[in-house]
Length: 315
Image 1 (cartoon, rainbow, N blue to C red):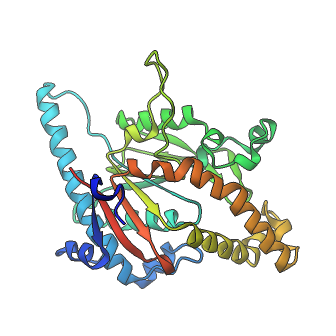
Image 2 (spheres, helix red, strand yellow):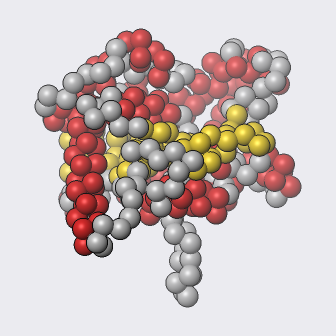
């Protein structure tokens, strides 16, 4: 069912209808690329890239071109002042929905346009408060909720990017140790396109009456995407990923979750369901999915991570 029913600000496309919008956009990825880009327990294949992501790549190329035209017009109006700034794409959605795979595929496709743009990808994980801070504030079981992020630091990063500044630093997060890596950063140096991926990148906050509130993260976006799926699918994907990690990454003694590799399969399943039901599902319902209507494009997944519907905001 389309978002908002009959009064939806979106136009809904079925899978085959959306696939036809690819036109002559070339497929620049092969199976080896997809193997490298595919996330754990995400069975995405080249057919999905052709039918879903090539039309999206074509649409984004039009948005980037239109934004650049607007920049040139504005620059002339201002008498030639100002410098070119990156086109920023925000990507939001639940834990286990496949945001990382989608972000990596988009980065690969966009960077292979004929103009060979420079495309960077940053996740908001690096802007989480360190575990020591979360533990001190009693927020470890709220990790991933809006209050667990260093919002001022994230906004400062985006403001520097949109100001056209070079060599902007972003913090690094390690999924192995489940924490921000002290004194380690990545450098984002004037990309043509920046993809910012995270749970709550479309999150808003209550504006103060004096109008002095900070901007929202999404204020820096030129285009935003929300990746969606039914709760039951998300639960099964999360649990499946947790059990797979228990047999792989969790076995590393340095892993924050190493203790889960030592328990029985039944205990592991119980733990995964607890983490999903009492943390991730709550975050989804309270903080993440309510931001879905703010996206320019909503990709809805069905079984096997296949996109079954695309909702594009009407201009």
